[in-house]
Length: 223
Image (cartoon, rainbow, N blue to C red):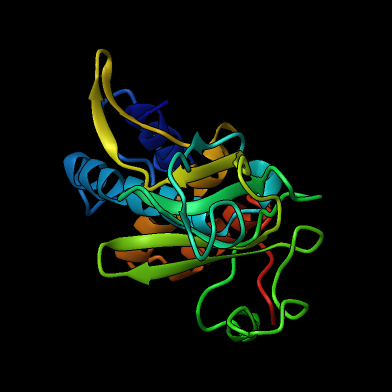
């Protein structure tokens, strides 16, 4: 867990808004101290969500386990399976069934060209234990993970499954806290500063801070 006050303090430094001993802002004279504090605080959850959603998978850490209950397409342990995801699901970290030869870290969506192929009646076209496919899909009760597919039969089970939750601020013993992947805290700090700079009308500063955040998070922006 990261302390929100620490994120705000570091974000203020990134914005070049260090306080003088009198408590006045160094660079911005118009917004007062409380206004800047409120702006930065209001951006923390959004910044954490944006960074963790886009970051390089190698920086996500272990995530939170899931996947205790599976709905099978046919006989138990065969074919496609569905797992209903927690309400706070943001992003998949890893998923692997016990009869798969490798884990999956990138899930597709229903708009991906590969998704339509998973409904083919020809098994060779669909995902399989050697080349598995995982999709995150919307349902009437929330998001679900579909995996293609298994051939292990009875006893086939989830070997690995973890996710990143939607980051939310919670009250802790020492003040407000937010769960952020440890390797992405710096990227979140710069993203908070970038979002605040946008709100303050400092578009050039916002762009520079966003670039730094993306670099720290391993985010590649296609031209």
